[in-house]
Image (cartoon, rainbow, N blue to C red; front, top):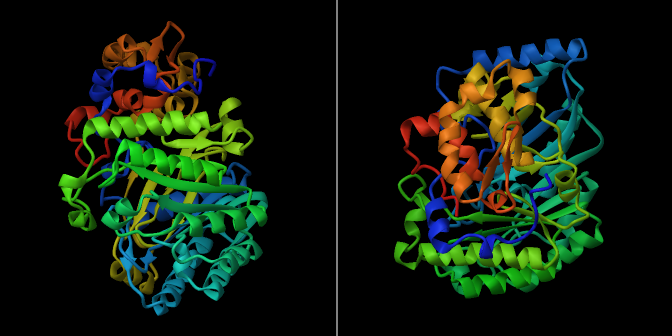
Length: 470
C-alpha cells in the first residue's frame, strides 16, 4: 500500500494519456458484473444457496450478513438517473410495498431461521425517505424481528434533501440509523434545472448541520460530474461548497449518458453535455479540490476525512467492496430485498424482478422474486479475487492467490500480463516477480487496471453499457 498516495494525478498524466484511459468499463461492485447474470438462475437455485448458508451457520461456518432494501419510489424524476425507480406522488403505494417486503422477509426466515446476525444494513432507492415516518418504523421493526443487528452495526439510509426535514432526520436516529447519505449531484442552478433536480445550498447545509448535531457516525454526499451545463469552473464552485459542508465521506461519480438504456436520460440535451476535455478538467478539479481540503482519496469515486472509518480501513489495508461500493465490512453474504435488488449468497449472485407487478406476483404465489443470477465458476472466483485485490488494496500478491486457488498466476494470466504492459509503460502499475502493484498514479484509474483481468469484457469488447472511466 505504500505506493498508493493522495497526490493528484494532474501533473503525472498528460491529457493525451487521460484520453487513452477514458474508456467504458465496470465499477466492479461485483465480478462477474450484473450484465452477465442469466435467467437460468432462478428461485430454486437461490433457495439452494440459502440452504447451504443455513447448513454452514449450523456448524458455525457462516459470517454475519449484510442487508440491502430497495425502496423504488420517488416523487419527481431526475433526468440523469439510471436507478430502478417508480415516479409517483401517491404515498399509499409505500404501505402496499411494505406488505410485499414482509412476504419476502418471511421467505428468507423460512430458509435461514430467525436471528441471523447482521453487521450492515442499508436502505437505498429510489428514495427511501418516500416512506412516511410510521412506515419506516414498521420496516425497521420487520427487519429487527427477522434478523439480529449486531452491536456497532452500520445502519445507513439514502436521503433526498428536497423532501427531508430536520424532524425527519431526528426520527431516523430513533430508528437506529447511524449513517446517512445526501444526494447532492451539483449546486449550480443551471445544472440543477437541466437535470430536473433543484435544491438550494442553504437547505442542504441546514440538513448536514442537523445530521452532525445528531451525531450520525458518517455523513456522505453524492456528486456527479459530466452533467449538462457543467463546466470545470462551475464544478469547482460546487466542490468548494461541498468542502464547506464538510461531510465525512464524498462519492464523486462520472455521469454515464446512455439514453438508449435509460429512458429518463432522453430528456437531457446531448449538446449541453461537457466535452471529454471538460470532463477531464472536472476530474482534475475534484481530485485536487477534495484532497486539497484534507480528504483522503479512498479509491474509485470515493473520498473520506482522515479519521473516518473508511480512510482508516484504507490505511490498514482492510478495504472491501460490495454492491454499495467501498466498505469497511469484511466479505460477507448480502441479502437484498425489494424490486430489482441484487444480492450475493455464497458463490452466487441473484437479482429480483425489475417491475413492481412481477415482483408482487411472485411473492403473492409464495415464491422468491428472483428472475436471474449466476453461480460463479472457479475461473470467476479466481478473477474476482484478483480484481477485488486491485480495487481494494491496489496490489495482487501471487503467492496468496496461488495458495487460495491452486494455480500459477503467471501461467493462467499470461495474456493478461501482456495487456498490462502498456499500463506499466504509462506508470499505472509495477509488475514484479512477486506482485502486481498499482502505483500512486494508477490508483486514480484502478478500473483501467482491473478490467484487464475481466475475461467477459475482454472477450466481447462490447462496453457501451458501462460508464466511462473518466
